[in-house]
Length: 82
Image 1 (spheres, helix red, strand yellow):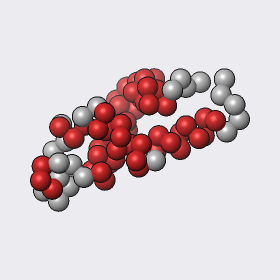
Image 2 (cartoon, one colour; image 1 turned 135 degrees about the horizontal axis):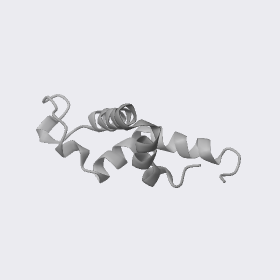
Image 3 (cartoon, helix red, strand yellow; image 1 turned 90 degrees about the vertical axis):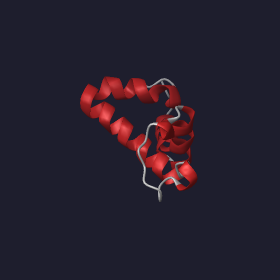
Image 4 (cartoon, helix red, strand yellow; image 1 turned 30 degrees about the vertical axis):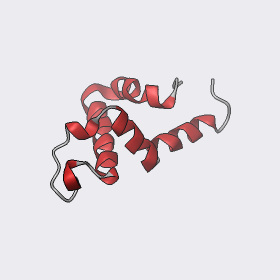
């Protein structure tokens, strides 16, 4: 069981833009996103597009598969969830 405040710190770390971009890059999300040239200058997705893409992915998994599926998706990035 996490200590008081520890879980909030982990959640804040996940939704931090830098963390979202890092995770999106780790799973190579940019290779499957369809982006216009302003979101992918030079063919490389900008950090904002990666952040938004990861957010949309998590939301879609939650919407389609429920909290269990979303939890399995984000748990590796957060550590074990209660």
